[in-house]
Length: 168
Image 1 (cartoon, rainbow, N blue to C red):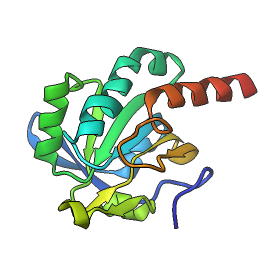
Image 2: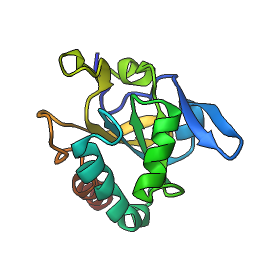
Image 3: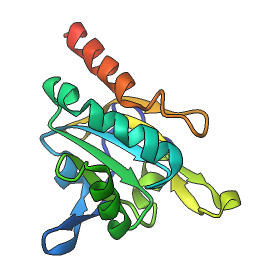
């Protein structure tokens, strides 16, 4: 079952790179008491993820933070070393949090995994974005087609945040 607006983020463990090396962080550490934009991508360095999805969030970083967002995070079914290299290669290191979901445990737990075996990629994450407030999903945008980052992109999330602010 796919996670939905109003659902609590399930318990899962991510790997992150720290100054001391790889470290485990659980979902509660990432989301508790914070307003977090999380976007999921099929793979670091893959064309749409690397040239469109991540750069959009990096370009809109200040605008998104100005809307009251505490953190912007990306997750992918890659190991922590690949995610760390991607953070450094894109200039997003220190701005966007890179959460490695190497075994797709989080992607499966939220019902957003995808079988990409036909492309030699195994189990991956679907492309999506979500706004999570204190561990509860308050907005969810899942891409329907491959190779696009429109519904899950930074512009859509910025619009979602503006709509939420106007409704309050």
